[in-house]
Amino acid sequence: MAELVESRKSVLGPFDVFASSKYTLYFGGQFISQTGTWMQQVALSWFVYDLTHSAFLLAAVGVAAQVPSLILMPFAGVMADSMNRHRIVLLTQIFAMIEAGILTALVMTGVAQIWHLMALAVFSGILMAFDMPMRSAFLVNIIDKKEDLPKAISMNSALFNVTRLIGPALAGVIMVKLNIGICFLINALSYIAVIGALLMIKGNFDPPKRERVKNEGLIKLKEGFEYTINTIPVRATIMFMAAFCMGGFVYITLMPVLVKELHGDPSTLGMLMSISAVGSCIGAVGLGFRKSILGLGKWIVAASFLFSLALILFSFCRTLGQYAPLMVIMGASMMFMMSACSTILQTVIEEEKRGRVMSLFTMAFMGTAPIGGLIGGAAANHYGYHATILCAGIYCLVVSLVFGSKMPELRKQSKPIYIEKGLLQAEDEIDILT
Image 1 (cartoon, rainbow, N blue to C red):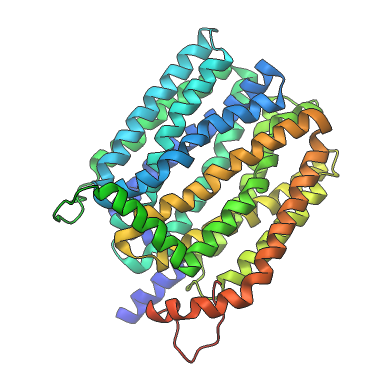
Image 2 (image 1 turned 90 degrees about the vertical axis):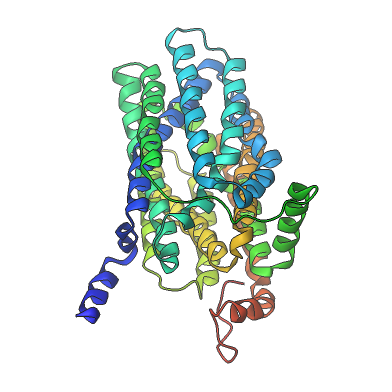
């Protein structure tokens, strides 16, 4: 009978994680909230470009939302390892609801100006800097079995992309049929679901009690940096994502520019974002059926090459029918890379340093992507959209080639760490991440 139950569980693959009632509650609340978040993001990008007609200012609002991550996220990681993660996540969701409410009021009363949007973007970025590493670290606290962690990460990635599929499509329809301010209002109301779910999740989420020392925060911050630098698979994963995402997200940042070139409307923008999300869902769910992180390195490199080549081809497209299949490919390969890298980190890092490492990982792509977007926005204003995307694709290809060339040596250096974690035997072939 036990074997039969185990067999049934194995058939479910990544869906086994829903045996945890805490995770199921969290997933449901996040599903509603993130759908609203995607609606707001798509509506805001269209609103900014429609208001300013500037690719640079479009990217600048994105930078304003991301710069706080570069400054605050390492400190947020320290907090994630020393404070109640449940409480902090709850507070960030409450303040995010307030930010969405203010944005709704500004847009629907017709008084919104670019400086308002910049200021709210900064506020949102501060919240994000604390929220994202906290949620990454909190995940391990709400699953029943630690071996289900890769499945939970996979389902979170799927959640991210299913809502990315639904949210932009809804936003496009609402912007055309109703009013763009409705998108911001729906996002504000959607936070009620995740706040309610978090309030229903019960448990002791306080960190282990220990004696406080002077300058403990700075000491922990230094420990986190040193651990990341000295742990080879962690360092290699974070450096790769930081470099790759600087060019890899340019096409998303400048999507309203493409839609205007296609003579489309907000529904076109929503449709394109949803098409990209279809690919992302494929990449995220596919990763969930892997039973081990061993061998993921080869797949990460392969996915990076696939994305780069698709982005280069994307720059030569001129019709919606040409763009669509390439967006599916780019969505799938990018999400596979991000989910695979997150899975590797969550598996190999030490529990007491989880929050700090995941904050640096989040900072790697959240911090560098807007820098690439700002450069891309300035380039698009001077050289055009397609030339900018071509340069971004070539850049990503170079990053892939460099990382791929380092793989043999990184594999050798990483093997002792995988043996120590029990993921690899000393006599096994070196077929791991790095």
